[in-house]
Image (cartoon, rainbow, N blue to C red; front, side):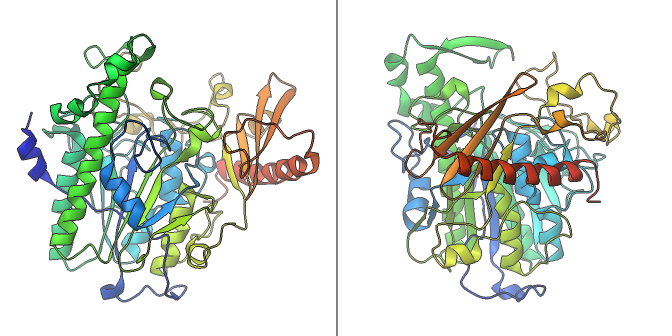
Length: 510
């Protein structure tokens, strides 16, 4: 393992999103290359909304994110499109809900016909790279859904998540061990990518998708030492997670687990700080957009100080509300805190507007946030929809694979075993005729004030909960009986949206 001193020198990265822009951009013509911002979009893995210093977490140390939130644009009501990772990442790439293309759950792939940020940014003249967790298909060379097939010029990536000394694939090659703390490794590779883009005279677009703080947890000594008091504070509460030694599920004391998890978050935060420093040294920080968010809420093994209901895998706030900050000194000159509801699906249409690219001719679930943020609006014109498709009903059906199963086999190993395998394989299917059961599964719709949450309880009963999110963000009081008309309106909107999603799922958008 590298020393702490050497790790400090390893690198910085670049991140970008453009959720705020004060210039009017033509609909189809991109801005002049000299005016185009560099863009880096960063995403953590399983980091909850509350797991930052700037939201007052009692233990987690995130001084860099705190600084970004204090000086940039803080999106206090930002949501992942799904309460788990692969689907959210699909929404991030496409601006479309993952159920439209069968990315229902972790280890369900995207479809090759989808148009991604990589395709759009490449078309606009950006040099595009992906670094870290991919998880919408294998990253190997012959995969039709690897980052290269999805529009990125180069990638150093993993099929799923990773820990220390990550095994990563460079441009689809066999996995190699990259020694060092995982977040630092990604920043090193991102910095090298930036130099190549600059040498080519092109603006750069990078996705930096960290493997932290997904379990199993680990940390370098300097970060673990910051949380040495936690094992003594929570010695008796046991949680279930993966063993780094065996790859199997074990029970461990919560305090030990949190010490390692928070060390990973702090290491990631430090890596982002080194990136910002390097951008400043190279004169790039002013016109580089750095965006940071998480892919879903806190995993159940680590829920401690959240004021929100629920956790990863649930459509309550604890599963889908995530931290999000934007830093872009050239345009965001004063600190801003936006109460606007926004989601990972909004990234694609917002970036399209920023760089003057047309949207694909297919349903887009996200919304361009630029005019709303520019004007300081707190309301959006369309609700945000959430839907965990009931994949269990597909297991007994003879479905035609969308992609050759051999091409869906992963290659990059990880600690956590699944079915005895240390790799992950993916799947995606041609969907049969739509049935009533296809509309089931946990789902929710969020407008500017109210949120309706629905669960199927058996074949015939639907449980409904309606919350006033401005007055009750903890989702404690079900207003269904008092606000029947509101609930009926939201459910009708949800049904109409599901009709559109299931039409897409059948492949009619291609």
